[in-house]
Length: 186
Length: 397
Image (cartoon, rainbow over all chains, first blue to last red; front, side):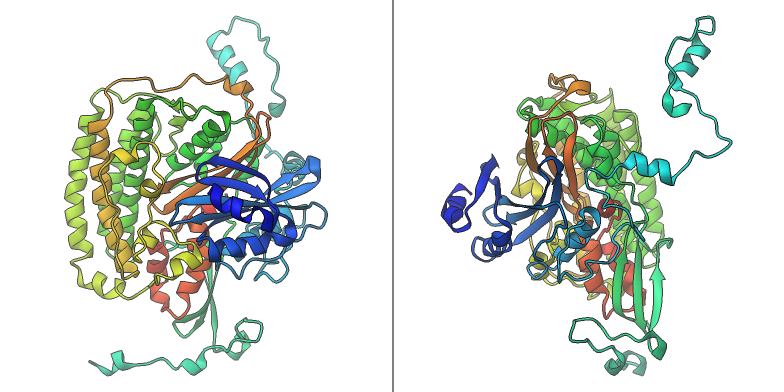
């Protein structure tokens, strides 16, 4: 694994290479060279099994990190190729021509993180959220609590108890209740 | 042969493909019919739908729709302490929840530097739990394929025997389906007294079932006629579509994480993953049936080789204040449906930055299924879908 990365280090100007094990490495490449490198690893280095594509929101750096995780079934090693793209109007070159399932990942990333992959099949179709008009839901600044409070409401006629207070009252009815009320049940 | 079987469909009625690669389907021409299969349909594997476009009874286009089960598990785990991720993660795959427990436990151990501390006994118990999960999945999956060809009695046998394995899970973990048995640093408990004997009794019942289900499926004329030559996955598709597990092995690509990337103590077990070459529904059923035999054998081997006593949990930090240094890893295992992995990213805080599951159905149920269904008969849709062992919860997480 190290030998492969040493060989292509200068060609792709790899940054922040780290080895999780002897057979699993993560490295960062520029946005312009990423798909070229993924293609090279598939065609020349035997990384023929596309494991997954993922995204991490590094909101504090104002970056989104894409990951292409490739596996070499013969040498039994993995490489995670990371690409950092801008968080505002994110867009990335499509790689759907390399593996036939890859467009599915790009379609999901468009919905979940708002990343556009121009030319990727069905990239604008809904994936899991039908008719979603809010901010992409997997971004760190999408506030799930706020969304839930604004969208849903407590069902009327339903009463709940704080389990700790309820059990204390049942088990020790003579003791005064000192526990704080649970705000969720107010 | 009667004239009926000599019938060749009129291919001219099929839609032409435009320059943009899309089919020219004009529903108003009345040549085509739209049919939604699912999400509420007994033949569909879970909560997903397949939008079919039919010309007569042949499929010209298929689109998989998911989202009926989305509960935002990955997002929820990002907002919770590491230990709070367990009850959430196991629900990402109903068929084999234990696989999620292992992945999340292993990922946190690797990133926090405790991966070498997991005691020997705990590793064997983790392996036992994972193989029991595979067994209960196969007891549903193998006869489930027979069910798609109206051989429903096999499903009833399988459900009964699966319940016996769930009984063993209940006494081992306290729960039947969602166990939360594998935790960071080890497992939650030792084997109860007499567990091995009761498990052996159950395995003997399953040995009988293995013979009966063989007669029901592979010695059955209906199954042979319907399953052979249908839903073929050519060997070259395995790399192109990222096909894994029994679906790949039935097409002649011998790939098993337990052998290729040994974890726990699988390298101490004697087994050889079964394969076939035809790549059709029959081949996939045959491989799974053989895997059923193998899983029973593996459980026997684990129970024979595991130590009688030992620590089951490493000394770990207080889980309520546990912070893991910044890092990332990918952990994988072989589930009953193939490679099951998790990309896990930490940022030094007490919650994970990103948890992303890679389930085999992500490929099998969307890109592959949509491709396989084109030009097949509508009567074969269920059988094809079940033969891929698709599981929607792991797609929409």
